[in-house]
Image 1 (cartoon, each protein chain N blue to C red):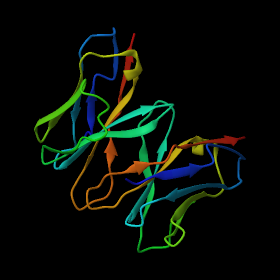
Image 2: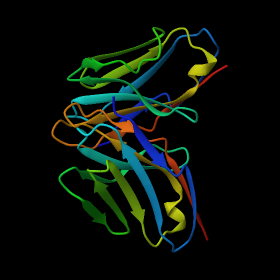
Image 3: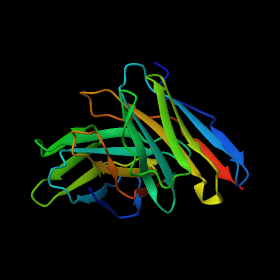
Length: 112
Length: 113
């Protein structure tokens, strides 16, 4: 099955700086790549996603890039704010069955 | 819409007891997923249903775990007998065919003593 690896496991950034999280996937058939944000004690919530026919997608301060050849995708958060502190999960899906394989998560801490 | 609803939100039980977790998906969603989240293993897919039919239960850890979906608006995950290593947060998520987004419920935090 699909294997998703995520790095780094923890990330500490100064408020206003950028944060980048990287994920790799193993199955070249994967075509859907969502990113979820999970605040402490809360449910995972989708923040952005990308399909394999697109190389980059932006939504305000967050963006995701996809390199199909290298089988990796990244989350970029610019101008980080304290409310960006959370655990971020990447995931991959072949799409036909909607099954998601999740990365291990990255704990992001934004220092004021 | 109220979103995905799970109950109970917290459950504390003793080893050997039966535990039943409940989930109500978003109305109109035809896929339902059960996940387990622990520090050690992260988010694991246990089982998922399409139109109330179990499609893939390969993530169910042992025969002590079972899941049912008797109708489009209700699913249960049962653990019998429960063990301390089953302690985790169990999430239910639902999805509408043709869309990509899985919507998660608030989770049930299970503690087995």
